[in-house]
Length: 171
Image 1 (tube, rainbow, N blue to C red):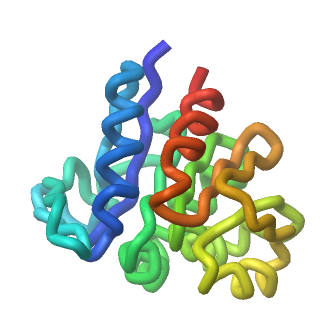
Image 2: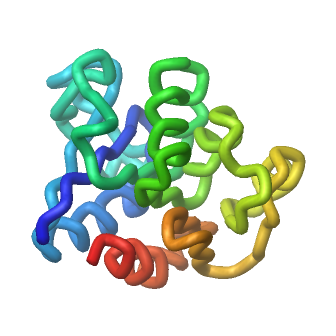
């Protein structure tokens, strides 16, 4: 059964943290819809290895029309969490218990959405203390799955485990 995955992303995302999972999702038959401030924008990864054309504007999407949320890392989540529209969008997925996949700095958006309290999760080393302050039960592991809903990983080296667990949740 094919699922539609919302991916919130903007400039300076961690290239491989978008490209590898997006490729794995698509190869498994799922659809990845990129969402940013404006449809048609082109956003570039922080390493300049990937450019993504945005499919939809945050103003034109409804979280109810998606089966899961994917938040790549890099500087993208920190920029997105300054915009209440992206915070509310992410919060909706957590509140209704739809799958959420956040890697590296991706959990920053979930911190701002105040949705990590009491949840097992991981993230990049430099944000683990922030996750702790947000009430998360922080694990320093390559992938953490919480309540068959939230999949988090720390860094690019963790992508194979991240992809495996995210795809398991989409079955």
